[in-house]
Length: 156
Image (cartoon, rainbow, N blue to C red; front, side, top):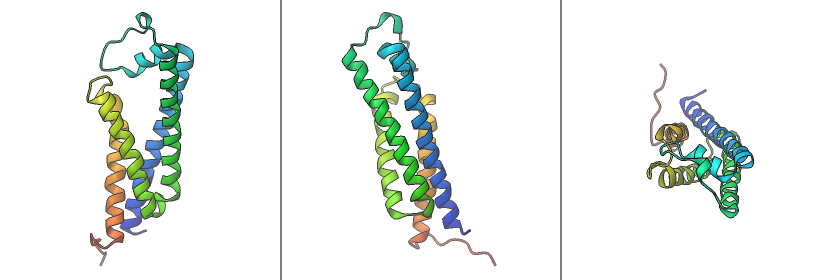
């Protein structure tokens, strides 16, 4: 297997892991919402700030909206995983742009809404960000080599 394929496959694995992590995280959020309500889910997500779930009432509409967000995250993770194993694995240009856009936008939302404001601890958001950075680096190098922008070292 040449370097291009190894890079593309490594990127695909990182994207697939990103997707699986987010499917599992969303499932955990939905379970917490069902068992503990909106205040329990907020307490679970608010890892950088103290939050008293017992002293907080989250209105039903807000809890439902949180559930919709978790449900959407579940399907985003599933879509990223499918694109990774079907397109990124083959170093597809379409797969490259799809997962770059989907994961990039999703992680930008995480940064903007939870990490930068200090609601979620950086350590809790780091897994997805690191997987995205690795996937992006590997898939970009794999695509660049296909396009001849980077000359792969050849064995003598």
